[in-house]
Image (cartoon, rainbow, N blue to C red):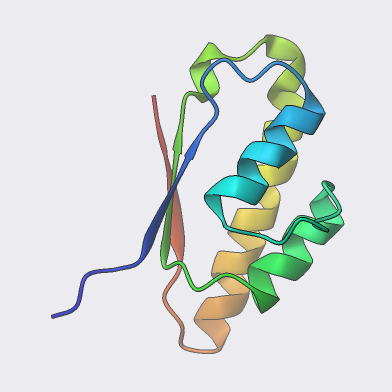
Length: 97
């Protein structure tokens, strides 16, 4: 049995939206031209991401003003999970405090 490819997205102490997307770019190894928005995240999750599991760390350390952004990120990840399942591909994510 092969081990799932896992990406750890560490958001501990993230201070602004640009930094959030930069951490996403680095964790997912997206190209420099990553658009740093949720549409670009969705696009690259389909074209440039082979991960089967995403572990999100440190959400509880970020200011409350980030909650709407996290909701958008979770929506994208949930949509990716649903879409990949329709194609028979494995994908999931979990939030680790």
